[in-house]
Image (cartoon, rainbow, N blue to C red; front, side, top):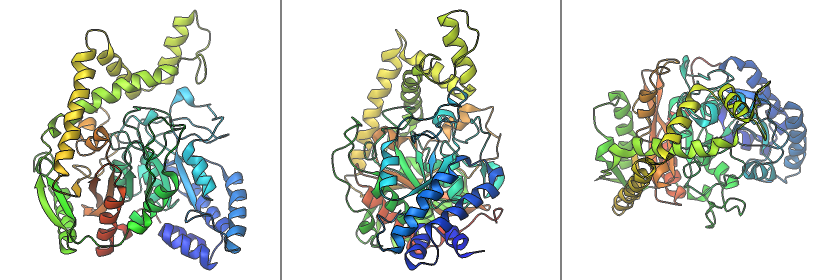
Length: 491
């Protein structure tokens, strides 16, 4: 293994140190990343690359870094984008047939900020179609394979992003999280994933699924990797009406390793034996014990509306998806059916041919709950329950600084295991959707293995307090080596 390949196998910190020491150039790191993407093509975690442009940008970064003029910690670093984040001149398929030939005419805000920081965007990661799924099996590109066990799912919908980081293709990838779509695949693939506070990262240029829930965030090998990436992409954007105006604090400086005096809340509703793999609970409790040994306190808290989160989420998310996806009608852009009889036939055939089964299911559900006579009974009621869920967290945070839970009730499942049981797939989001409904920041990080597969610990923070969950996660990393574990099946 050459020096660049060795650095790439580590993570952002190792690559940054190697670049700054002159052990390798950005060009060599990007070449190694592209070569590894090609070598592991069978994983189907990357759907397209921009090799020529990336190498040209890496050459410029190499010169800057050699001159001691690095733009940021991400300067010269290869990064992947989830395929629902637009990049001018590049495809943005959302893993859907209806957008299979779409090329974006503009850059998303996160792309602008990554490029201004010198990051090298090497390609695009696989995902569930329009971010609707928990396994990255709902994709026109085919399912992504978990690097830890190739016949198992990466999770979703940002499964390609998580799988790419786990397989060592890039140190950082961006995903989007509507109900757990960053944290769930991070848990399944043994990497760190952060869903920021709603509005903390601009959604300008993110293809919308559920606009009141969607949020872009980073995945990386370590908490510090994600902190550095979030520092670059976060902050106010006037083009996004939901962007919060508060400035982003220094997240990297928050990683002190000190959690003495912090209080961690443990929701009684999330630590029940029923429906949870006992080995998952054991790893999570071991991680919490490590934090207690580091000086943190734990207290029980209650989130009494937890049993209602899945139903609330799937009413709101499908309603907003139905509205957002109405724009894909075969008229303005995207797939257009041939030889249609009239306008109605154009709409019906373009959408029928373009959307997959899961997207159609959610559009139908969403259209139903928004329909006359049912709007208040379903969508209106779900919004009222959402308020109660948010108040549960506000009350819990009166007695704690951070809430800790399992990220998922299980480790990665086999590909196809839940394909015919969508309800089972939906129920697996039980621990993650509440943070989206409440608009709170949350991260998933590795906390050990169960039967050889990664387990994730979830940390949920107060609104706009990404710094504290990152601080707690970093402190746990310093006391354990779970982040250093690598998939045995990927050389």
